[in-house]
Length: 380
Ligand code: PMP
Ligand code: GLN
Image 1 (tube, rainbow, N blue to C red):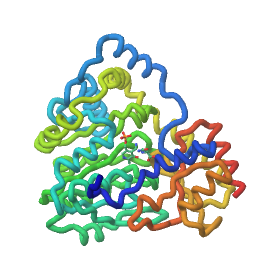
Image 2 (cartoon, rainbow, N blue to C red):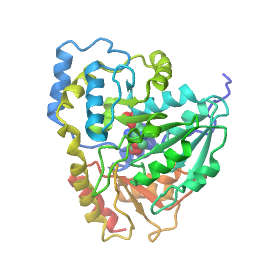
Image 3 (cartoon, helix red, strand yellow):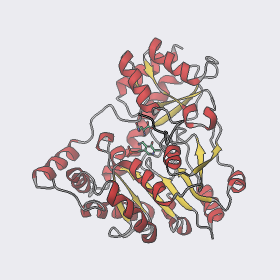
Image 4 (cartoon, rainbow, N blue to C red):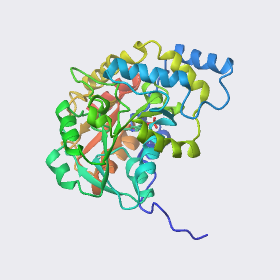
């Protein structure tokens, strides 16, 4: 059968490729971003309870009311602002669906979308399938800072959306308060929508602060703030996320959401809602993952890799330029096949696959895995 591909240049996602190789060669898998340990038993019990108490038919199409209320309460506690759970919060199949639906709802053919690279790999295909044009701004190692002058130059009358992601996957850097103010100033008076991917909002280290787009009134009025409950609570396989936006924007989003997804897994939503009644369920995550980051770094500090400690997310970049001049994909593959450690080559997230000689390692792993991986990396 003949057909014309709508995404002719898109390859299989790097996460499936590297995890596939890790499995094939029995490597320690620090590539794909998911924990290799169990979540909290209390949460599993609450999801089971919800299933046994009848939460098994279609959930409300905007999300189980108890969960939307729990999300509203979390945002009020953390960011001192509010969304109406009836009209401004929608539960989605992971953050991925929130991102895809937001882009599909607003991007028309030839609309431009500014994307900072390295970028999470679902953004560009989601733009292109809708006929949009990604306008890339490449960030550079080691600090991956945004040059707002460059953003201003790349903005035009065709700019319909800007996608930001803080804490940033894969670099582990964060947008500062000043960055958010600059973005607010640049977009003021425009019709530009901000898609703010904040899936790592609860994984913040040292003295850093997360500056959610919802904390800046003008940004809030034009933003979809996206988060991931699967990611937050160590159960990426549950694929539950959400987004928040002002009612006029959310009304449009929901037109599409109702006919692509309709509603999300019900007992899991109810279990998470009950679990979130205790704010410690998310408040203690930064400390937990900071210890993991520190353990991993302690075991690679004597290696030839160079690094700046991650400020947020559960990823750590390691710069291997003193070890080899191989391209990052070949080196990552060799690390799996010859040395038994899997990582993510970051060039796949860059414009024209720019190779900055950095690999991404996920430290959401057991202490034993992190120590073993560190020992292997130190011998290189
Ligand atoms: N955005 C970023 C930056 C991510 O790293 C991920 C992976 N968790 C997602 C979105 C997708 O999240 P989910 O698994 O909830 O779809
Ligand atoms: N967000 C995860 C990561 O960055 C992976 C998500 C996926 O596998 N699609 O590793």
